[in-house]
Length: 395
Image (cartoon, rainbow, N blue to C red; front, side, top):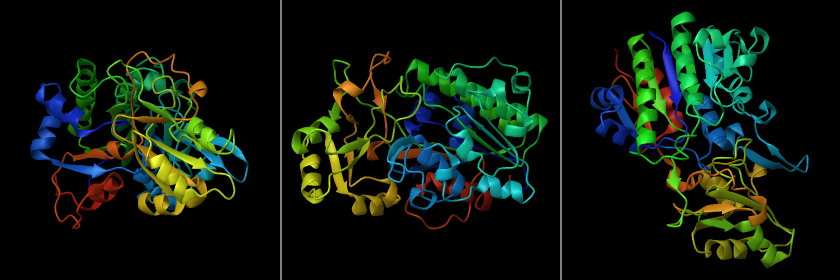
Protein backbone atom coordinates (compact mmCIF):
# COMPACT_ATOMS: atom_id res chain seq x y z
CA UNK A 1 0.00 0.00 0.00
CA UNK A 2 1.27 3.44 -0.90
CA UNK A 3 -0.66 5.12 1.93
CA UNK A 4 -2.64 4.13 5.03
CA UNK A 5 -5.98 2.45 4.34
CA UNK A 6 -8.89 3.22 6.67
CA UNK A 7 -11.93 0.97 6.24
CA UNK A 8 -15.08 2.28 7.95
CA UNK A 9 -18.20 0.24 8.64
CA UNK A 10 -21.03 2.63 9.50
CA UNK A 11 -23.58 0.60 11.42
CA UNK A 12 -27.12 0.92 10.07
CA UNK A 13 -26.23 3.22 7.19
CA UNK A 14 -28.24 3.22 4.00
CA UNK A 15 -27.49 5.54 1.08
CA UNK A 16 -30.43 7.78 1.91
CA UNK A 17 -28.71 8.99 5.10
CA UNK A 18 -25.72 10.14 3.07
CA UNK A 19 -27.71 11.68 0.23
CA UNK A 20 -29.97 13.65 2.54
CA UNK A 21 -27.09 14.84 4.73
CA UNK A 22 -25.28 15.98 1.57
CA UNK A 23 -28.42 17.71 0.24
CA UNK A 24 -28.79 19.52 3.58
CA UNK A 25 -25.20 20.79 3.37
CA UNK A 26 -24.28 18.81 6.49
CA UNK A 27 -21.65 16.58 4.87
CA UNK A 28 -19.30 18.47 2.53
CA UNK A 29 -16.61 15.75 2.54
CA UNK A 30 -19.12 13.09 1.56
CA UNK A 31 -20.41 15.44 -1.14
CA UNK A 32 -16.89 15.66 -2.60
CA UNK A 33 -16.53 11.87 -2.49
CA UNK A 34 -19.81 11.42 -4.36
CA UNK A 35 -18.56 13.88 -6.98
CA UNK A 36 -14.86 13.07 -7.26
CA UNK A 37 -14.34 9.69 -5.63
CA UNK A 38 -16.21 6.45 -6.22
CA UNK A 39 -19.64 5.48 -4.95
CA UNK A 40 -21.57 2.24 -5.34
CA UNK A 41 -24.72 0.70 -3.96
CA UNK A 42 -23.73 -2.72 -2.63
CA UNK A 43 -25.46 -5.69 -1.03
CA UNK A 44 -24.79 -6.67 2.55
CA UNK A 45 -25.03 -10.18 3.92
CA UNK A 46 -28.46 -11.51 4.89
CA UNK A 47 -29.36 -11.66 7.73
CA UNK A 48 -28.62 -7.96 7.66
CA UNK A 49 -27.18 -7.81 11.17
CA UNK A 50 -23.96 -6.48 12.67
CA UNK A 51 -21.82 -9.53 13.38
CA UNK A 52 -22.31 -11.44 10.10
CA UNK A 53 -21.53 -8.37 8.02
CA UNK A 54 -18.54 -7.07 9.95
CA UNK A 55 -16.99 -10.52 9.78
CA UNK A 56 -17.72 -10.80 6.06
CA UNK A 57 -16.07 -7.42 5.50
CA UNK A 58 -12.86 -8.40 7.30
CA UNK A 59 -12.69 -11.94 5.90
CA UNK A 60 -13.91 -11.20 2.37
CA UNK A 61 -16.23 -14.23 2.41
CA UNK A 62 -19.91 -14.95 3.25
CA UNK A 63 -21.13 -16.56 6.50
CA UNK A 64 -21.18 -20.01 4.90
CA UNK A 65 -17.38 -19.78 5.03
CA UNK A 66 -16.62 -17.72 8.16
CA UNK A 67 -19.46 -19.20 10.20
CA UNK A 68 -20.87 -16.07 11.87
CA UNK A 69 -24.51 -15.99 10.80
CA UNK A 70 -25.99 -13.78 13.52
CA UNK A 71 -25.36 -11.99 16.78
CA UNK A 72 -27.01 -14.90 18.58
CA UNK A 73 -27.71 -18.55 17.76
CA UNK A 74 -28.68 -21.96 19.05
CA UNK A 75 -25.57 -24.07 19.61
CA UNK A 76 -26.81 -27.58 18.93
CA UNK A 77 -23.68 -29.18 20.40
CA UNK A 78 -24.06 -27.32 23.67
CA UNK A 79 -27.88 -27.38 23.56
CA UNK A 80 -27.84 -23.69 24.47
CA UNK A 81 -28.80 -20.34 23.04
CA UNK A 82 -25.65 -18.23 23.08
CA UNK A 83 -24.11 -15.00 21.84
CA UNK A 84 -21.99 -15.57 18.74
CA UNK A 85 -19.21 -13.21 19.84
CA UNK A 86 -16.63 -15.77 20.96
CA UNK A 87 -13.74 -16.15 18.48
CA UNK A 88 -14.14 -19.93 18.70
CA UNK A 89 -17.16 -19.60 16.41
CA UNK A 90 -15.13 -17.95 13.62
CA UNK A 91 -14.17 -20.44 10.91
CA UNK A 92 -11.99 -18.22 8.70
CA UNK A 93 -9.01 -16.00 9.23
CA UNK A 94 -9.36 -12.24 8.89
CA UNK A 95 -7.50 -9.96 6.52
CA UNK A 96 -6.63 -7.90 9.59
CA UNK A 97 -4.66 -10.74 11.16
CA UNK A 98 -3.10 -11.68 7.82
CA UNK A 99 -1.83 -8.14 7.22
CA UNK A 100 -0.38 -7.98 10.72
CA UNK A 101 1.30 -11.35 10.26
CA UNK A 102 2.86 -10.04 7.05
CA UNK A 103 4.38 -7.14 8.97
CA UNK A 104 1.77 -4.39 8.53
CA UNK A 105 0.74 -2.14 11.41
CA UNK A 106 -2.96 -2.81 12.03
CA UNK A 107 -5.45 -1.03 14.29
CA UNK A 108 -9.10 -1.89 14.97
CA UNK A 109 -11.59 0.27 16.87
CA UNK A 110 -15.16 -0.88 17.42
CA UNK A 111 -18.01 0.91 19.16
CA UNK A 112 -19.35 -2.05 21.13
CA UNK A 113 -17.21 -4.67 22.76
CA UNK A 114 -19.29 -7.55 21.31
CA UNK A 115 -17.28 -7.33 18.08
CA UNK A 116 -13.82 -6.73 19.48
CA UNK A 117 -12.82 -10.32 20.17
CA UNK A 118 -14.09 -11.57 16.80
CA UNK A 119 -12.36 -8.83 14.81
CA UNK A 120 -9.21 -9.20 16.87
CA UNK A 121 -8.86 -12.97 16.54
CA UNK A 122 -5.18 -13.83 16.00
CA UNK A 123 -4.41 -10.14 15.46
CA UNK A 124 -1.03 -8.81 16.55
CA UNK A 125 -1.88 -5.15 16.71
CA UNK A 126 -4.19 -2.61 18.32
CA UNK A 127 -7.78 -3.71 18.92
CA UNK A 128 -10.18 -2.09 21.39
CA UNK A 129 -13.77 -0.92 21.78
CA UNK A 130 -15.04 2.54 22.62
CA UNK A 131 -17.36 0.88 25.14
CA UNK A 132 -14.41 -0.34 27.24
CA UNK A 133 -11.75 2.16 26.24
CA UNK A 134 -11.01 2.86 29.90
CA UNK A 135 -9.91 -0.74 30.46
CA UNK A 136 -7.40 -1.12 27.61
CA UNK A 137 -4.05 -2.75 28.31
CA UNK A 138 -1.08 -3.39 26.07
CA UNK A 139 -1.32 -7.10 26.78
CA UNK A 140 -4.99 -7.41 25.83
CA UNK A 141 -5.50 -4.56 23.35
CA UNK A 142 -2.06 -3.59 22.08
CA UNK A 143 -2.42 -0.14 23.62
CA UNK A 144 -3.13 1.58 26.93
CA UNK A 145 -4.03 5.12 27.92
CA UNK A 146 -6.74 5.34 25.27
CA UNK A 147 -8.86 7.95 27.04
CA UNK A 148 -5.84 10.22 27.30
CA UNK A 149 -4.91 9.63 23.66
CA UNK A 150 -8.40 10.38 22.38
CA UNK A 151 -9.05 13.24 24.77
CA UNK A 152 -12.68 12.31 25.37
CA UNK A 153 -14.49 10.75 28.35
CA UNK A 154 -15.76 7.19 28.21
CA UNK A 155 -19.05 7.40 26.26
CA UNK A 156 -22.36 5.75 27.12
CA UNK A 157 -23.05 2.63 25.07
CA UNK A 158 -26.47 4.11 24.28
CA UNK A 159 -25.35 7.34 22.66
CA UNK A 160 -24.09 8.90 19.44
CA UNK A 161 -20.93 9.69 21.41
CA UNK A 162 -19.94 6.01 21.23
CA UNK A 163 -19.51 6.28 17.46
CA UNK A 164 -17.86 9.67 17.72
CA UNK A 165 -15.28 8.14 20.05
CA UNK A 166 -14.49 5.55 17.36
CA UNK A 167 -13.83 8.26 14.77
CA UNK A 168 -11.86 10.44 17.17
CA UNK A 169 -9.74 7.45 18.14
CA UNK A 170 -9.15 6.68 14.47
CA UNK A 171 -7.84 10.17 13.81
CA UNK A 172 -5.55 10.09 16.86
CA UNK A 173 -4.24 6.62 16.01
CA UNK A 174 -3.49 7.69 12.45
CA UNK A 175 -1.53 10.65 13.77
CA UNK A 176 0.29 8.82 16.57
CA UNK A 177 0.73 5.27 15.27
CA UNK A 178 0.39 5.64 11.48
CA UNK A 179 -1.11 2.17 10.97
CA UNK A 180 -0.98 0.70 7.48
CA UNK A 181 -4.51 -0.66 7.85
CA UNK A 182 -7.20 0.57 10.21
CA UNK A 183 -10.75 -0.76 10.65
CA UNK A 184 -13.36 1.43 12.34
CA UNK A 185 -16.83 0.08 13.19
CA UNK A 186 -19.57 2.27 14.68
CA UNK A 187 -22.93 1.68 16.38
CA UNK A 188 -26.42 2.19 14.92
CA UNK A 189 -27.85 3.91 18.01
CA UNK A 190 -28.80 7.00 15.98
CA UNK A 191 -30.15 5.09 12.98
CA UNK A 192 -32.45 3.03 15.23
CA UNK A 193 -34.07 6.30 16.32
CA UNK A 194 -33.70 8.77 13.45
CA UNK A 195 -34.75 8.44 9.81
CA UNK A 196 -32.64 9.77 6.91
CA UNK A 197 -32.88 13.53 6.59
CA UNK A 198 -34.00 14.10 10.19
CA UNK A 199 -32.17 16.67 12.28
CA UNK A 200 -30.62 14.00 14.50
CA UNK A 201 -29.45 11.95 11.53
CA UNK A 202 -27.96 14.93 9.71
CA UNK A 203 -26.19 16.00 12.90
CA UNK A 204 -24.67 12.52 13.24
CA UNK A 205 -23.50 12.44 9.62
CA UNK A 206 -22.07 15.95 9.96
CA UNK A 207 -19.98 14.70 12.89
CA UNK A 208 -18.86 11.67 10.93
CA UNK A 209 -18.10 13.79 7.87
CA UNK A 210 -15.74 16.03 9.82
CA UNK A 211 -13.67 13.09 11.08
CA UNK A 212 -13.60 11.42 7.66
CA UNK A 213 -12.27 14.68 6.25
CA UNK A 214 -9.47 14.62 8.84
CA UNK A 215 -8.53 11.05 7.89
CA UNK A 216 -8.48 12.08 4.24
CA UNK A 217 -6.41 15.19 4.94
CA UNK A 218 -3.89 13.05 6.81
CA UNK A 219 -3.25 11.13 3.58
CA UNK A 220 -5.33 8.01 4.14
CA UNK A 221 -7.28 6.12 1.55
CA UNK A 222 -10.76 6.05 3.06
CA UNK A 223 -13.16 3.23 2.17
CA UNK A 224 -16.63 3.31 3.70
CA UNK A 225 -19.48 0.83 3.74
CA UNK A 226 -22.18 -0.42 6.12
CA UNK A 227 -23.26 -3.64 7.76
CA UNK A 228 -26.97 -3.11 6.99
CA UNK A 229 -29.62 -0.51 6.32
CA UNK A 230 -32.52 0.48 8.57
CA UNK A 231 -36.29 0.92 8.17
CA UNK A 232 -39.35 1.98 10.14
CA UNK A 233 -40.99 -1.08 11.70
CA UNK A 234 -44.06 0.53 13.28
CA UNK A 235 -47.61 1.52 12.49
CA UNK A 236 -49.24 4.94 12.46
CA UNK A 237 -49.88 4.55 16.18
CA UNK A 238 -46.13 4.19 16.82
CA UNK A 239 -46.44 0.58 18.00
CA UNK A 240 -44.14 -2.07 16.48
CA UNK A 241 -45.52 -4.07 13.56
CA UNK A 242 -44.51 -7.45 14.95
CA UNK A 243 -45.22 -11.08 14.13
CA UNK A 244 -44.60 -13.16 17.26
CA UNK A 245 -43.52 -16.38 15.56
CA UNK A 246 -43.02 -18.47 18.72
CA UNK A 247 -46.62 -17.78 19.70
CA UNK A 248 -47.76 -18.78 16.20
CA UNK A 249 -45.81 -22.06 16.19
CA UNK A 250 -46.90 -22.84 19.74
CA UNK A 251 -50.50 -22.56 18.57
CA UNK A 252 -49.90 -24.70 15.49
CA UNK A 253 -47.61 -27.38 16.92
CA UNK A 254 -48.09 -27.29 20.67
CA UNK A 255 -46.40 -25.18 23.30
CA UNK A 256 -42.60 -25.50 23.29
CA UNK A 257 -42.44 -27.96 20.40
CA UNK A 258 -40.58 -25.44 18.21
CA UNK A 259 -37.78 -23.07 19.16
CA UNK A 260 -37.60 -19.63 17.49
CA UNK A 261 -34.23 -17.88 17.47
CA UNK A 262 -33.82 -14.17 16.73
CA UNK A 263 -30.24 -13.58 15.50
CA UNK A 264 -30.56 -9.81 16.11
CA UNK A 265 -30.39 -10.51 19.86
CA UNK A 266 -27.34 -8.98 21.54
CA UNK A 267 -26.54 -7.45 24.95
CA UNK A 268 -27.83 -4.04 23.78
CA UNK A 269 -31.55 -4.51 23.15
CA UNK A 270 -32.86 -1.22 24.56
CA UNK A 271 -33.11 0.45 21.15
CA UNK A 272 -34.67 -2.49 19.26
CA UNK A 273 -36.19 -4.81 21.85
CA UNK A 274 -34.59 -7.80 20.06
CA UNK A 275 -37.08 -7.31 17.21
CA UNK A 276 -35.67 -7.68 13.70
CA UNK A 277 -36.79 -8.89 10.29
CA UNK A 278 -35.03 -12.29 10.26
CA UNK A 279 -35.75 -15.36 12.37
CA UNK A 280 -34.98 -19.05 12.29
CA UNK A 281 -37.00 -21.87 13.87
CA UNK A 282 -36.00 -25.33 15.05
CA UNK A 283 -38.92 -27.69 14.50
CA UNK A 284 -39.87 -30.96 16.22
CA UNK A 285 -38.84 -34.27 14.63
CA UNK A 286 -41.19 -35.35 11.88
CA UNK A 287 -42.54 -31.84 11.23
CA UNK A 288 -43.49 -31.12 7.62
CA UNK A 289 -41.03 -28.28 7.05
CA UNK A 290 -42.21 -27.45 3.54
CA UNK A 291 -45.84 -27.22 4.63
CA UNK A 292 -44.90 -25.07 7.63
CA UNK A 293 -42.86 -22.76 5.38
CA UNK A 294 -45.95 -22.25 3.23
CA UNK A 295 -48.06 -21.46 6.30
CA UNK A 296 -45.50 -19.06 7.76
CA UNK A 297 -45.05 -17.33 4.39
CA UNK A 298 -48.81 -16.81 4.32
CA UNK A 299 -48.84 -14.77 7.54
CA UNK A 300 -49.62 -11.13 6.81
CA UNK A 301 -46.40 -9.10 6.82
CA UNK A 302 -44.13 -12.08 6.18
CA UNK A 303 -42.03 -11.83 3.01
CA UNK A 304 -40.80 -15.41 2.75
CA UNK A 305 -40.17 -18.62 4.66
CA UNK A 306 -37.68 -21.22 3.43
CA UNK A 307 -36.39 -24.61 4.56
CA UNK A 308 -32.83 -24.74 5.88
CA UNK A 309 -31.14 -26.00 2.72
CA UNK A 310 -32.82 -23.50 0.41
CA UNK A 311 -32.26 -20.57 2.77
CA UNK A 312 -28.60 -21.43 3.35
CA UNK A 313 -27.99 -21.83 -0.37
CA UNK A 314 -29.70 -18.55 -1.24
CA UNK A 315 -28.12 -16.48 1.54
CA UNK A 316 -24.79 -18.34 1.85
CA UNK A 317 -25.27 -19.39 5.47
CA UNK A 318 -23.76 -22.30 7.46
CA UNK A 319 -26.51 -24.96 7.62
CA UNK A 320 -25.41 -26.31 11.01
CA UNK A 321 -25.97 -22.91 12.64
CA UNK A 322 -29.39 -22.23 11.13
CA UNK A 323 -32.73 -23.78 12.10
CA UNK A 324 -35.05 -25.93 10.05
CA UNK A 325 -37.00 -22.90 8.84
CA UNK A 326 -35.88 -19.35 8.01
CA UNK A 327 -38.43 -16.51 8.02
CA UNK A 328 -37.98 -12.96 6.71
CA UNK A 329 -40.57 -10.25 7.21
CA UNK A 330 -41.55 -7.40 4.93
CA UNK A 331 -39.93 -3.95 4.96
CA UNK A 332 -41.96 -2.41 7.78
CA UNK A 333 -42.51 -5.54 9.87
CA UNK A 334 -40.39 -7.33 12.50
CA UNK A 335 -40.41 -10.84 13.93
CA UNK A 336 -40.47 -11.64 17.63
CA UNK A 337 -40.62 -14.81 19.68
CA UNK A 338 -43.45 -14.59 22.23
CA UNK A 339 -45.19 -11.38 23.14
CA UNK A 340 -44.29 -11.84 26.81
CA UNK A 341 -40.56 -12.27 26.09
CA UNK A 342 -39.94 -8.83 24.57
CA UNK A 343 -39.39 -5.91 26.90
CA UNK A 344 -40.18 -2.81 24.84
CA UNK A 345 -40.15 -0.43 27.79
CA UNK A 346 -36.77 0.95 26.70
CA UNK A 347 -38.05 2.13 23.32
CA UNK A 348 -38.24 5.91 23.52
CA UNK A 349 -38.96 6.33 19.79
CA UNK A 350 -41.04 4.36 17.28
CA UNK A 351 -39.22 1.18 16.33
CA UNK A 352 -36.70 1.19 13.49
CA UNK A 353 -34.85 -2.05 12.87
CA UNK A 354 -33.24 -4.36 10.30
CA UNK A 355 -32.38 -7.95 9.43
CA UNK A 356 -34.26 -8.62 6.21
CA UNK A 357 -33.90 -8.18 2.48
CA UNK A 358 -35.26 -4.63 2.74
CA UNK A 359 -32.11 -3.60 4.64
CA UNK A 360 -29.67 -5.29 2.25
CA UNK A 361 -28.72 -2.25 0.12
CA UNK A 362 -25.77 -0.32 1.60
CA UNK A 363 -23.33 2.31 0.34
CA UNK A 364 -19.72 1.67 -0.63
CA UNK A 365 -17.64 4.83 -1.00
CA UNK A 366 -13.97 5.55 -1.69
CA UNK A 367 -12.12 8.86 -1.63
CA UNK A 368 -10.34 7.82 -4.83
CA UNK A 369 -11.75 6.82 -8.18
CA UNK A 370 -11.84 3.19 -9.22
CA UNK A 371 -10.38 1.64 -12.34
CA UNK A 372 -10.46 -1.84 -13.82
CA UNK A 373 -13.15 -3.22 -11.57
CA UNK A 374 -14.12 -6.84 -12.15
CA UNK A 375 -17.32 -7.15 -14.15
CA UNK A 376 -19.98 -7.59 -11.47
CA UNK A 377 -23.66 -6.83 -11.72
CA UNK A 378 -23.68 -5.77 -8.08
CA UNK A 379 -20.99 -5.11 -5.52
CA UNK A 380 -21.12 -6.65 -2.07
CA UNK A 381 -19.99 -4.89 1.08
CA UNK A 382 -17.31 -7.50 1.64
CA UNK A 383 -15.71 -6.58 -1.70
CA UNK A 384 -14.48 -3.39 -0.06
CA UNK A 385 -10.94 -4.54 0.78
CA UNK A 386 -10.43 -5.99 -2.69
CA UNK A 387 -11.55 -2.74 -4.34
CA UNK A 388 -9.55 -0.55 -1.96
CA UNK A 389 -6.35 -2.56 -2.34
CA UNK A 390 -6.52 -3.58 -6.00
CA UNK A 391 -8.87 -1.37 -7.99
CA UNK A 392 -8.38 2.28 -7.00
CA UNK A 393 -6.64 4.77 -9.25
CA UNK A 394 -3.45 6.39 -7.92
CA UNK A 395 -4.12 9.35 -5.65
